[in-house]
Image (cartoon, rainbow, N blue to C red):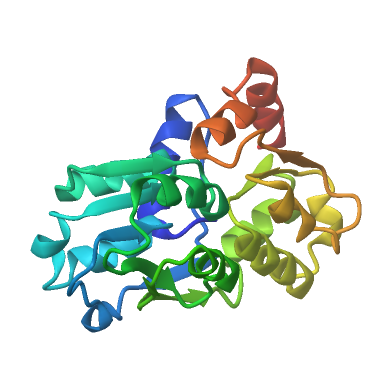
Length: 245
């Protein structure tokens, strides 16, 4: 259910574990705010999403950016930064709030601004806390998100015919969109036979309106934990899929 560019990579990882995977992006990302990026005097960049870095890569500021310290949320965002040529990276845990202590440790309150590459649905509490600590934070909106308005007909048919074993939800917003579309397509009953793998408790909470759906949450909010949660395809699940076919 994640945006297609990331979904393709995650799909390959799951296929390697023996799963059959269907991609159904529920969020579409547009990196159309690159003109708003201003690095003049900046001491560091904060990336809480790979999408922010992809927007930066399309900006004329990318070469100047590579010379700055970069704070990255999670290993995936840090890996994207390295692939773009960043060399000074502070990698934090997989959520923005836990990045704040690292920023406080490595950045200077009395130095230049911190530039947070944000999306259009960013939480203000992250920047509010940095400002409370005395940092000046610039927060250009460098990407926007459009949500799916319906599910593909083939997927709806597969869910109704019990050919889907699991749904993977990697953000609270994705889960909210999914729950809305399940209601739109009258799939509530079908979903009670599908395991919903959620990256966090906050993500799982968005499914509260779907009564009786099985939910499993990762121990930590990152892709490695999600892969461990889902696990390899088993012979038993493969047999059950064959029977359904």
